[in-house]
Length: 298
Image 1 (cartoon, helix red, strand yellow):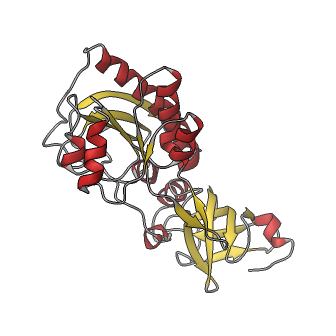
Image 2: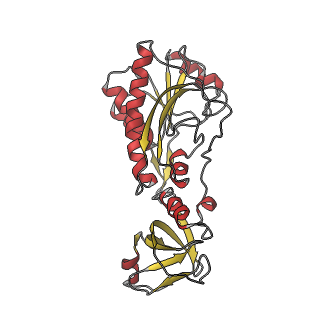
Image 3: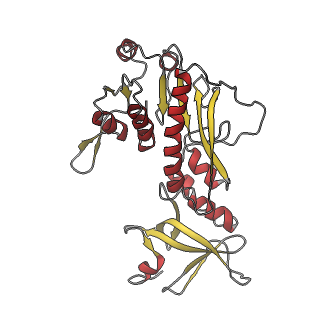
């Protein structure tokens, strides 16, 4: 069960290792673009490539869907980046249902673990497989693998590595379950847990009253998508890359910018200046600041 690109390598690695995938469950097709053409999810496209049966329920509690799912007699279900499942679905197989989550649980439970790990300045994260139960992302852990977060990582670069590492962990988990030799360790209780809630557009506005490093991590954790943003001269600019720059003591207020309209654009944070290196001005493409200044001014 999965929908976006993140789930595709996990499905592919199972098929290529001759795991018997009896069905693939993914999101319904959507219309896209001006022509309103039907668009398949990345997981559906992958499933069709391997001639796998695809189910696309709109209602996971619908009796007809549950009956069809039951008819395939799967003894294990695997979830990678899908929606929340009712108990009637996750409890159906004899062995149960396990999920791949892109964090080291119990940390960063929620919809956006990769983003929030970078936003919070973490130095490492990872992937976890765990059995589903009632409360979201709280089931017993099967396996975990760590991944270093580099200083120049964005959510895009880290996503790519965790997607591949996660696929390998899914296969390892299936093989261990197949051999009936796998751990099932309850998640630690009574520890301080950091959460990873869904990110909305308003969540992505840069707060220039924060220190420079917090702002840099915030931008990295939202680049390239959905992208941090700010307003300059009442226009929205998406910020994809920024760095800290040395500047002498200044009386400029946080959020104010200085520029020569040729080579640099610096914005004041609470403890220094941020150099905006790549951005997307409203109504334009993504570009470097120097490219922007060839035909525009701020």
